[in-house]
Length: 136
Image (cartoon, rainbow, N blue to C red):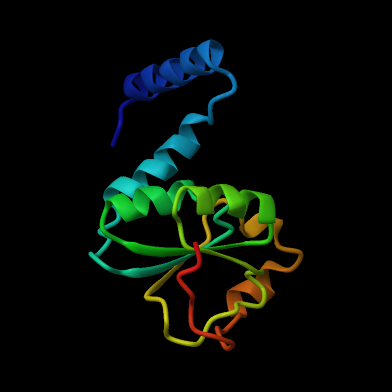
């Protein structure tokens, strides 16, 4: 367990970083990203649905780790940017997934659950409609 001194030093570093670059995410977000991308053991060719993928930042990082991500988002402009990066994305909602059951081994919904009108509907959603396409 960190000592009080370690915690104070950590806080001072965070304050200094926020002072120098206030537009960057807070250290908490950086730690979450590091945990998600650096400490989760992603399997090669693991099928991952990134709900709320936006421009595909996490999809790009997951693909670098050998994962097979497909993105889903309601923002068509963001999806166009993801397609320019050759990412497979689909226009759709996390509250009505347009994929068949059992297609994905993991569903990632990082930094977007708070955008759902009813997050409980999204969590309870079963994939029922079509198999994922490799649209680019």
